[in-house]
Length: 396
Image (tube, rainbow, N blue to C red; front, side, top):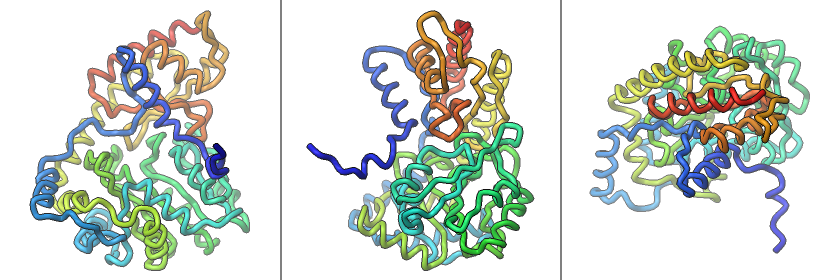
């Protein structure tokens, strides 16, 4: 059978690949600790689940409008005003089946073949692959742990060419946990002001999981707000990964373009999820804040453990629920059976030897690092890192 050449343009997400390998080992009876997937280990808050039950009982079981129910789009606007002091109207909002679809809609609606998309490293694995699907060109800006995995204005300016169409980043960042301050964003905005043809796709899905203060959106700068597409959703901050709901806030022109794309792929998002999302976005945020408090405790514990492991250097994440340590000190070492040449080797070695899953940094544009999640119980985290420490100690 001859499959489409489209499949050759992009790769399978390494995050999902590692999760699949972990499941295969579990199916053989092996106790695998999952530190690979970015999924809160909490249940969806009760008041949100009750809203979904009510929606079922009220027979919200029919097709929904492609951009989302009006009351949900109004709820998104309420949230953006309450949390970010940003003014949007329902016509600016498109609701999708997860923030990943929101990103895909925007990429397909905005990027033409050969146009350049600037992405700071490290970045979420899907960013570069969406650019390839749209036949665009990825332009990476390398950041370093010494920079806190954040780029500066000079780096941004140097990356811009006449073909630059889009700047794509996340804050808080997956995988590094980097969080851009208002001052840091303002310096990037000064560059964007000089290049009015560049759009900014701002992934803010980890907004509530922030350990250093108030979330700052780049859309707050009026000079460039019309060029910003905010992407957000409910998966991380509300423990609603399986519910699949994301959204964008953008100009009406861009929103309509994304609606047109979505209309041919999935049409409207799950109706029950939408009704639950109205409640999630407009009522009690305390469960979300309590989750973040627990993530903060886990972050502290993981950093204590990692700092005691020889050969690992790790910037302190300011948001999200990952650490992204540099493990390159182990390259070239061996336990007598396995020799470590790169981050992929480290991840596979830890999976097969310590039975702990992680994700190699190459997938995020940073080949010296490996991503480990702390969205798991404290018990599992401590046991997982005990195994990792023992496995790494065997490499000489």
